[in-house]
Length: 117
Image (cartoon, rainbow, N blue to C red; front, side, top):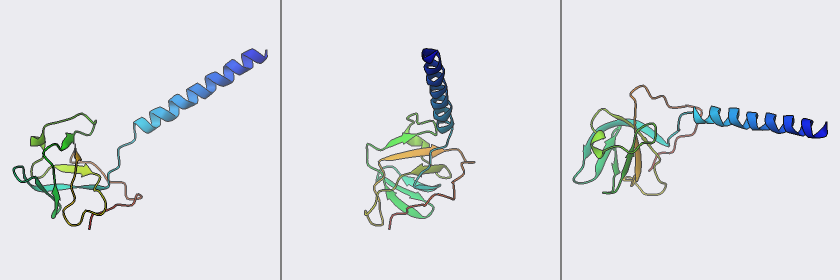
């Protein structure tokens, strides 16, 4: 009897973990900065998003919303992007990873947004 009760409690715990994990998997990634590309100068590694200039190194990684790596050519005027700006790099922050987002991507307003200075 005790073994049966332990098995059913264990099964319930596993089921609960699966449900919680699947709920988090469906949640959208939240970025420190989301905006629309104004321009991208590939030769100089300059990306302007919402009138702010960011630096992209030669080895920048570009992803789609499903975290699949995509070509750098996806960064063009009018495309919505998201990334995590590093702290303390002044007016031209270096961005090592950037995500190309769908035009209808919504930013959660209940999270703090960090902008580089």
